[in-house]
Length: 230
Image (cartoon, rainbow, N blue to C red; front, side, top):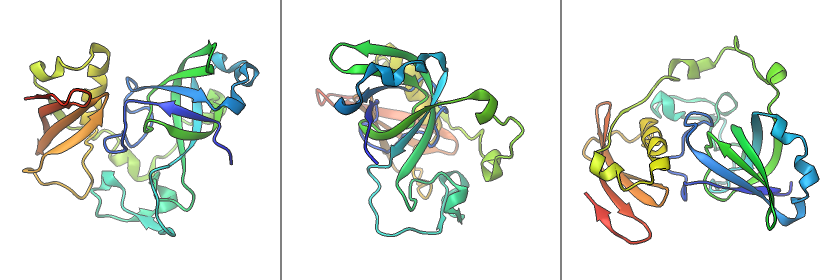
């Protein structure tokens, strides 16, 4: 398969990215096609859809072989399920699937068609293999069973983000960073209340600790300047 496009997002690393697309709709992305695929005719009619499917590569997951079972984070990282019953990135083939909101299609003079999307769960510069429209009358199944995910779909942390720290974020990024933290970015196996974690998001290292169900932001580092805010 050939890479047809790449996406720009606010996540330079995979840590902290929501585990599913659509969980944080305020997370934005811009898809730019590779030079070979910048023909505007390729996206003709796409602006008639509200959502699109992305097929992409787990480009940062490099491992030999595969395992028939994995430990889903939402089950605490201590219960195994079949890999094909999960959306784990550790699969026989490194293919990801995301459904994102298509906000607009822009025909750029230099880069050709550019797709502005929301609800992303991809790292910056993730390679994309294919783009397909989401078709409501075939893709939506409201009465479908959700397996073990139904039991954990409403899981969120309470976020305490001091106003003087949040003020350093661009206003349009504030809602997104709070919802990213609500999704509990910690590895499933790590529940040490004394440990400090950090999520690299939108040019900041957001440092926090978690006690019980409350996540408290304690420090920011601005990547460009190296300035630390407490």
